[in-house]
Length: 430
Ligand SMILES: Cc1cc2nc3c(=O)[nH]c(=O)nc-3n(C[C@H](O)[C@H](O)[C@H](O)COP(=O)(O)OP(=O)(O)OC[C@H]3O[C@@H](n4cnc5c(N)ncnc54)[C@H](O)[C@@H]3O)c2cc1C
Image 1 (cartoon, protein in one colour):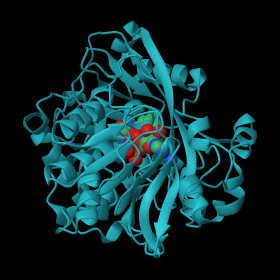
Image 2 (tube, protein in one colour):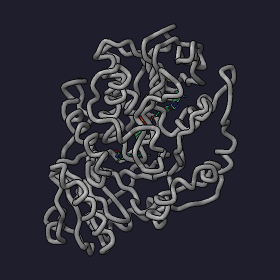
Image 3 (cartoon, helix red, strand yellow):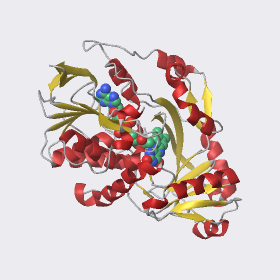
Image 4 (cartoon, protein in one colour):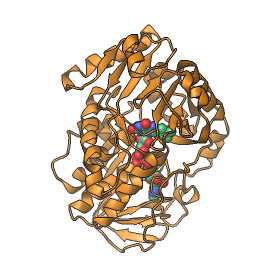
């Protein structure tokens, strides 16, 4: 967990019934709770650990349209509007700044990728622009990296993951949502072929609908219900520096590092070119669905058979409502950061922008990411289980879109016109 995570106290009292139960207190679950509560729909959110304890507090805080698949951009545009209106809506500043995001290319292949992306979104009227090396130096002075060019979107931005989901949760509670932490949901209860409640470690709550927003646990939870959601895990390590002078307010992503300013004046840094990809049983079961991703990302993935394989093997895949579930056994996914990768990121960054020679590490952490075969999430009803909707599989870029994804999920649950066309997020495409 990051040292700066804002923690929230919630009720310990489980209500006997409600209209909608949301499982998972990440950015997606809490924004869905806010949207439902604002519509006066009774909603209870259950979190096995604490609000934002997993991915939603551990991410880099980038809020971007850049480099998204074209059909994922409308969700990001909707999210930009929600982020901008959030301080007024919830009465808290979560560090949202439209300070811009820039990606840099060293090789012709990398540049061709950004040019291809730029063309793929030409119809969407974004403010993105391709950059020359001179333009990069103007935007981010003091560098000595050799760049072929890049892509820059001034309206992209950032917010503080250590604040955002908790602040949204507080806003939702003020609007009438009930939230209970340390309360794992084991499974659903069904009557007459549809959802009629959830079975938690503390007992049952009856409800009409369930929204599952369980992040990296989704495959496990849904698998126990006979619903096969393909996701594989990746681990991303991150460090935060002490406050220091930096070259820019823009978030910058190079092939082998990235940095963005933190609200306290330090920088959040990662090795963008290397992610740990621990092998698990799921790689054998569904790895074939990921061939295109593996081909494209083979230089960036540190695929390894290690202790994670056996840890994962020890986590149950099937249980019944009367049994202790994996969600009670592991309250918070807290992988150890890879210090080698963090050092590598810092070295690469110092070579490119020597001002980072002064960087001192304040803290480091890691987070486990749930990746779908096409890197888009699923936000959809599960037809096989009437009354169940899921919003999950955000594949390492769901913090930025989280508020719109939560809203879209709330729209689906409450049957109103969805905030955007949900078809890119259909479950049956996977
Ligand atoms: C290191 C790192 C860097 C990233 N950088 C970025 C970035 O810069 N920009 C960006 O857009 N995205 C980024 N991401 C991705 C982003 O953090 C996620 O896509 C997003 O936070 C997902 O939100 P979520 O609500 O789906 O999941 P989570 O935040 O993981 O929340 C799911 C919650 O559900 C709970 N839960 C699961 N099962 C149960 C159960 N049965 N009962 C009760 N509770 C349950 C879990 O405890 C968890 O708290 C990054 C991720 C990581 C790890």
